[in-house]
Image 1 (tube, rainbow, N blue to C red):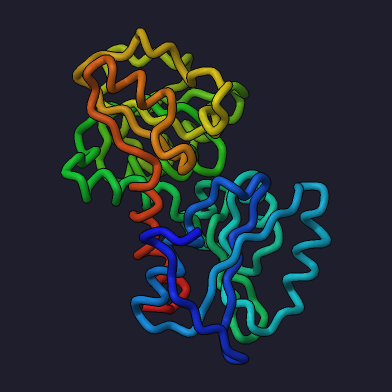
Image 2 (spheres, rainbow, N blue to C red):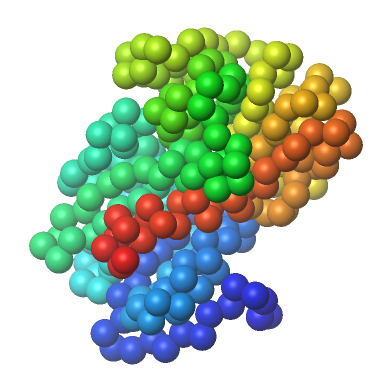
Length: 271
């Protein structure tokens, strides 16, 4: 089915391909966006979804290593930490976060890893005149996306971060990293209570399914808060609908994806 993002692709014998790897994969929208951008720029590349489980990751990665026309990999849930272990070179940002979501495949066979979840999220905020500078942020989720967002928010000048995760040790590890690299940011861990925060950010996959619970009690949200998502499908989650019903300003996950596009295409050397 065609939509406004559908690209007219001309795949040739010289086409380099890029994969978006995840489990599940049906929710991914980046292939649509990136193919549209590539088509608009006349680039001889194609982005495709690749679905494999964490249990098959080792075999999949070994297979990917042999392709000479593989230009890059965009790992998503649950593969970001796993791909971290197999790259040959890491950016400082990826080392801080402890995950990758973008890998550039060099002509000499080396894989170079970086992570742009947080950069994309902050870019999305700024593009919509919602800079996090000087703001307090409740961040729910300390996985690959949440960790990246924590460091990007700190770098962007957020004044306070409360990091929450169902595995407290994960939140504590990210908070310790933020405190080490950005000592000017007041960072703590705890339960997801939004009271007193300027921005509430859901960085978990909770909300992808229609029967998912809320990442926090929406009755605790204040009408003056900005509530944001990283989830791409559905476009507007139940959590954002509940926040809008409370009178909150909201930002959908697709804004973060758009924010990643420029950084990722530059990293791949496509623009």
